[in-house]
Image 1 (cartoon, rainbow over the protein chains, first blue to last red):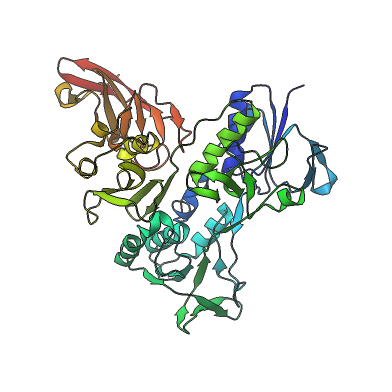
Image 2 (cartoon, each protein chain N blue to C red):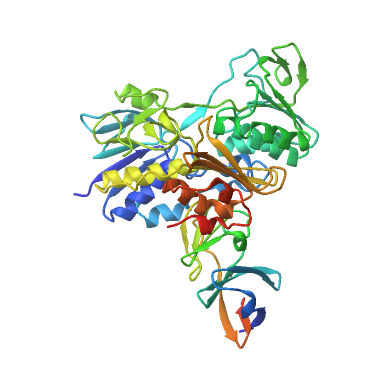
Length: 405
Length: 102
């Protein structure tokens, strides 16, 4: 009898796990269970193209026929109530149960709720699903006062899209700078300036005391008493892991399902992938949740390989991107606060690279409108090749001539 | 079959890409070690010019989000892309590169 894998969670990581499993094993019995009604989709367009009025189909991973052709039993609108790892059984709402040989948890995250008076008023939104994106999009009308709470990548992308829709946009960030933990704060000032240039009112060190309105929100009251008019409030203050199902079944969790480098949880034959995971050891640190498109892709591959008994590929420098206005910002690896910063190109130019260097090797990089260089930079980081800072900073020296295979 | 002259061989050194346009279709023209190939210039994932991308081993990587395509076949290989890239027939006549977009 063919091996049966059940994947709980039909987002990007879940669907990619199904695709990777099928590629490895033509006879495997694969079931993909999703709570939402939509076909599995990716989230990057939800704060950009789809939010700007583009078709939600832009985000869809595969058409429905793909699942049939690849013999993946996709079931949407299904709620999983629990699983028993000893009996290898999953229970669904309405009393149905499913047997598995391998179980992959891909239950994702949900927006961290804002806990202040008025947080449940109409007009207070979050952005996670396609439905969230189209709801918010409908409210981004020209001239609307949009207050984005949270100056992380999601909040900033929403702000940039709202500006494209001619809204009046305020971003509130409780830290004293934007993105203080990304490359030790390297992008904070740059992004504040970028958004201010586009007429966003960026307020750092700003806390929210209350959201005001009768049934519909009309203002945000800040901790210092300031009142900001608001037609729409978007809460983008991070995410909480949907790890309740795993925890209830006895899987080790800590705001995320703990996994090793092979995507294994603490329970036998139970794996976890994507945003819901907290990785015990990762290039970016110990015990981190890496909520990125790339991580969902990679962990899907890794889980499928582990289930298939194949050694997964070696870990490489993590990669992340964001699109805001006409800036495509790509980030590789990480940075320690005391790393040397080597600039390639001027930070005021439309395109530049920054490298974070320690002991003549590159630990991480930011590529501003310089995606073409990503391959070379990734190679330099992954091979820990020794570099010369003067050469790296010389735009006349092609990076391809510095990155050896 | 309508072949249109699109570039001169000498203007596209080996290992490089040239952005061209034929009848309003953006075309990326590649020189892979002396052999020429043409694809649609716009990535199937998001609006980016592949001619600004990274070319290596016959594969073109989109500069925006790292979608990877086989230049010869247009096949989507990895990254956030699943739709293949349109390819066009290429022919060399003397010093001229001709492309057929039909």
